[in-house]
Amino acid sequence: MRKLFLPLLPLLAGLTVSQVHAIALPSPDDQGGMIMSAVTVSGDTLTLMFNSGTAPVLGSLDYWHAINSNIPANVSPGDAWYGMVDPDSGSGALINCQFGFAATGDYLPSNRSLGIKLTAASADLLQAWNYNSAYNRFAEVFSDIGDQVLWNGGMWHPYFTLPADSAPGLYSATFDIFVADALFTEGIGAVDYSASALSAQRDSIYNLLTLTYQWEVIPEPSAWLLLAGGLLALTVSVRYLQPRATA
Ligand SMILES: [Cu+2]
Image (cartoon, rainbow, N blue to C red; front, side, top):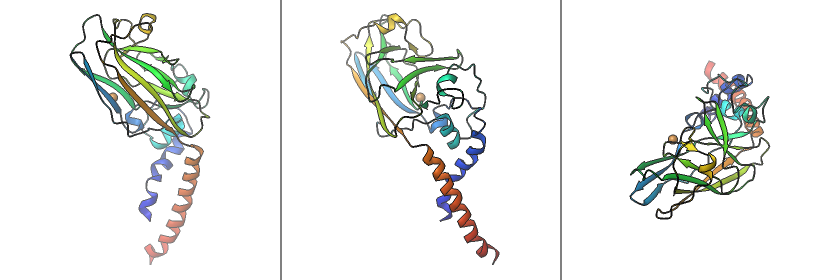
């Protein structure tokens, strides 16, 4: 029985600290690890390795801090993401950045680059952001269905967000990965979403890959109910165990 309550302990530890709210954006590792989609370029063939079996949680900053107290505490209101994500002074968006894009293989011709295009989303309010802490950028990408970025093939973990009050359930976004007839020029990190990047056309000599990411929104208040339940259970189990321990 005792073992059953152990997973609740990190949650307990996180709660006291999360009341401060002074926390930075959690990295993929802070959220439970990267989930990569790996693109390989071989001649004019693109292949994709992606295990679509997991739907990571889109959670509030409070949620991430509750499950992981190692998230660094160096946030300031000047951080570009603050208004969107901060639970107190910002919109408190639910976030996840575990999904990442990465490419290997042959170099493309110098007038070509990889592109990623949003082709479908299960909710209008699902948003994607290119985060670069060094440049303090938190810039929306894929604002509308059909929007794209050019991609230099380097590992890219966009942050996906939903409004704080989004209904629990599964959410998804579908992307095309393709070769575009344009140069990667004005990238911030691994992606270029300049005007010329947005208007690049697909080079159909190369095949098209499609990819669907799926996330889960969980009812966060129930995490606190669970915590309360866990506390109660701990109390009960301690009271139950104590007579035996001292006997
Ligand atoms: Cu990665």
